[in-house]
Amino acid sequence: MPGVRTELPPGPSESPLLQAIRFGRDPYGYLERAAAAHGPVFTLRLPGDPPRVVVCEPALIRQIFAMKQDEILASPEGIPVNLGKHTLLFLDGEPHRRDRALLTPPLHGARLDGYAATMHEVTRAAIATLRPGARVDLHRFLQDITLEIIVRCVFGVRDPAQRARIEGPVVRWLEGTFVPATFFAGMVMGWGRVRDLLDRAAERALQGRTGALARRLPWNRVGAAKAEVLAYLRADLEHCRTHGIGERTDILAMLAEARDEDGEPMAIDHAIDELVTMLVGGHETTANTLTWTLSHILPRPDVMAALHDELHRVFGDGGVDPRRCGELPYLEACLKESMRMTPIAPAVPRVVARDYPLGDWTLPAGTILFPCTYVTHRRADLWSEPNAFRPERFLDGDKVSTDRYFPFGGGRRTCIGMAFARFEMRIVLATLLHGARLRAVDTAPKRAIIRGLTVAPVEMSADFSPRMG
Ligand code: HEM
Image (cartoon, rainbow, N blue to C red; front, side, top):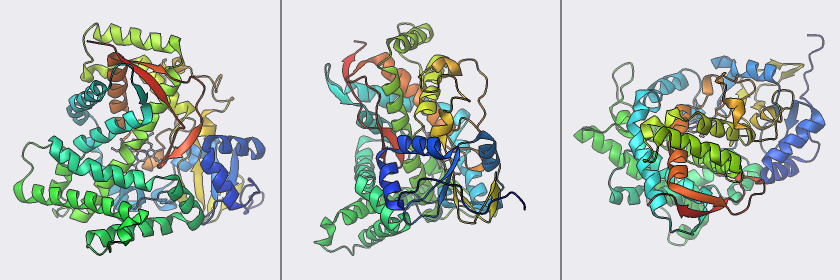
């Protein structure tokens, strides 16, 4: 077709390794500088990966989010954890649609109300562990809260002994995986190789084939922790199948009972993959978003005063009623504004299944499209004062279209946990602000780093004093 270019859009010219290092060290800044130099559509090249075409143009983002099922493939790029071949994240086409239909109900609507008390209780218990005057590493603190929420709501873990059995291995597995070394190994060796290495280690551990000396190697330690998580989930799923689920309403119990269209139960391996996906996709994302939110609001006395006024208006002098946290529009606007300025997923990948026309280009099959939240969310032609934290912009109730604001992605792969995460973040933030007085140790804007799969502020500490009693 005349006028359509078959080469890829221009982009940074340094070597793929240097691009990876610079992107890894400063993800937001690197994308921002590349967009300033090359315009709203540019190509990043990272070692071992197909080229990534970064897109910060609403009309093209709209086109990408409307892509048909057979035009896109799931992208495991950038994910060092082997979530298994049945995970929603790596499924395409009909199997993807079928699993989404199955997993959507427990993460939406009235089912969320059933999780409210747990989310509130976990946050209150975490606040109760803090000594007055303690200096709190907010990321660690929030990660402990969101992990426990996922473990209780998704895995249905109830008593403390059971919790200790699962939380220890989960933390050792994920913290061992999401170290900078894994990120750089993924960038240099390719993510597939890193996933295979860690997965073979878990397989060996599951089969008891790791020798005494080899157990000390970092990837074997990580593999052993993952093997413990998998063994726990398998035992609980089998227990549910054999003894029934009783009063349980968690997602693990629901998957144990799930039947496909032919009435066949879901294979245990399949259920495990989906549960692990919820765990990995569901706790660090929420913890990082909450940490970013506190990094924006704590240094702002005007915003904090407005938040406390709202909490007082709704809850008076009593405690937070978690079922009423939907009545806090200003708090909700702070969360939205935080996700605009500092989205934990700076871009959402899509792999094109066949040659694909986008704007002035035809992109070859296998290219990774990278609609970029961060740069689009900061465009001065789309947002007034884009670099200022102004929650008021989300107060008028107008829905912002997903071609310019998409912290949870868009189209058929939109985050399935979005409603759960927003519900949870409202309860955790309201409970925290109502029950604790937090003062940021350092009020300077925070640098972004890649933590796990997502982007977090480099360091965020606050001094704690109790608010009530
Ligand atoms: C603030 C919290 C969260 C943020 C910002 C977030 C963000 C995202 C983003 C950007 C995507 C990719 C969407 C796309 O490709 O268009 C995604 C996918 C996904 N998220 Fe979340 N997420 C959050 C919380 C959660 C929670 C709580 C869960 C589960 C309990 C979850 C489970 C998933 C899953 C399973 C997918 C893959 C969906 C698919 O491929 O069909 N997320 N999330």
